[in-house]
Image (cartoon, rainbow, N blue to C red; front, side, top):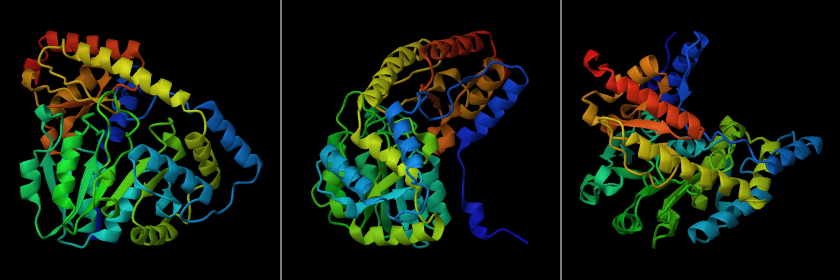
Length: 392
């Protein structure tokens, strides 16, 4: 027996592979500082936990509507309408187990073999994985450091063909922490609005911006009916393990996504939806305090990274990732990431874990204590200054 050929086209996430290696070193007694995994290091807020407990006591343990519970979908629609400045109601919302189904399902529903998908590179590796899985053609557009890790708009325009079916955007972005400027969003919308092309706008970090206003392309003229917004609760409310996300999309696509939900998950867990309702309608102060702490860590950590020999790190404008340029070390990204784990006890990710255009960079998650972040910098400093680079 053999696996289907399509399984050879599906990828994975390097972050979890590095985590396994780091845990193995810890099992040997090594001290490892974990800066590889992209999840908040804060507890889920208490009122959300209490809502889940109450839901379990009240019997929210059975099947629910495939599209999601109506009151949660309406609450999401209201929040999205207010934050993005777009008209939306619950009929456009699909609640799913985590954010990834809003990559998986729309791409399966929209793409035929040979269709082309433009996406940022470096970026979340599941984009490319799912494009390949569907048999479509990935068309990576490099993110430009001196443009705040946004696209070169001339290259974006010239990359569009009559086979382009979908464009993927991510702002604030993983792994760069970049926010696409409003003028770039507007320019891309003007290019795309007249064309028969859909946009998947991954806005999972939309609440985590430290400066510029995060603008959704769905708010631009002619784009509401052409945009799928991906968002969820994992990052904003420290709910990664709850596995609950959502998409906001045109009604005709909702029907297709619902069919895929019926065939895969039936529905999202009922009690987690009650917790999500409490998250989105309840006190926002815990989330705001967490984001403020991420900003504080960002400022200190990036400043410290810029004191390391061979490192140059732009200040990320969103999310909780630093993406330093390490070309000054003379090392390749994967080799340096491996060496820092093995020799310095600092778990980071190679920029190439997010695509070929990530060469020359590392990704650090600053979802760790300030004490650990500064200790990680000192461990890296000792490694870089002790003549280790010549050994690699």
